[in-house]
Length: 486
Image (cartoon, rainbow, N blue to C red; front, side, top):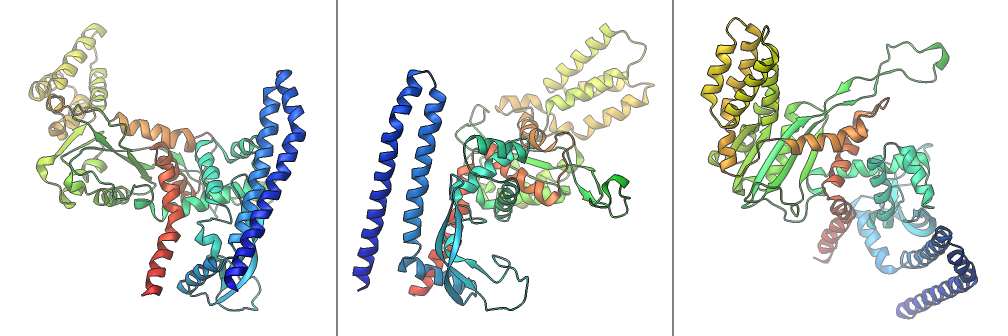
């Protein structure tokens, strides 16, 4: 009887699909003269828009038919029960559920809904943090009742566009249904789920740096926070409707991990890793250490850590690697050459009563000594210039402190870079272009998630992240199916 019932449902589904396709075939035939007319009159844009819309409508219809039927299958009912049991949700019933497709079109299906127990308390939450949830939507990797394809596109636009308002305009232009508040909710929720699995969510299965040349760099950017200030008086015009807040600058600390070839060039086929935290330096290096541990950094053939001269970086760089089991002979440290040159410029600027020609000559000489690795001559020369000039002596401390990180001639001999442009470029592309806009203020819990997702996208890891996110529930389910079978 079950087999007969299954075949009848399958036959019914096939008939609905055939009818749907035939219906759209008729619509296409009706539209055909208009499409031809568009091309003959030179209106290619109208041709594309009308044909595209017809295809989207057909997609919506087919998706609704197939999803609605499969949602009521016995196989998915069994899987829903397993998920419900694992979550401690005992009451299982069929219930209507909304599902937003890739086109933004919302369909209604009968899903399996599970709850802990019936409650008469008013205002009781539902969903992941409440009394229950729609199990099939969770099994399919949906977020806020949106399919992976829909929330992927929404989240991608949210971290690429300058504002959520622009995201909405783009979606409307592409005839994808969306609402401003829902765009924000989806972007933040996707960010939250990725953020809570941030170490593995953007990595390929088994990804590591074994036998590879690795370059690591760290730097800080700037963005403005939105922090509530209850002591701040409200302006008369607001009439107390808006909570007052401060907008302090904060420093997102960002690190990058790249793979180099034997010539010292970045290997384009090896996807880099970017991540950032808006917190103290310890948090940044703890996160970096977690990534490096996952990548098995101790198996790398060579590691270059390069950055500017900030103490918060160099106080932690080598110890982080050593604590992960990296041999000291594999580690090289370098201060970015161009930051060092900036300090030479500052030294030259302190030379008073010397004409510009001599200043330029001194600058070129010092820069050449530094580049060629003649550090003793460099320091001796600057010391001579500093006689009677305390400000220059203060600037010279920078070079004394980093003398072992300025062996640029040795780096060149080993085909290693002398500049930290990779992290400075990442700061600009990940943070500045999206999160440093004028009059833009962020809550820390939101901006960290968006920075993480933008970093994932710019490193070419977006599809890896979305696939890993959608598979989290599948892995969880497969584990439980094995336990049940045992």
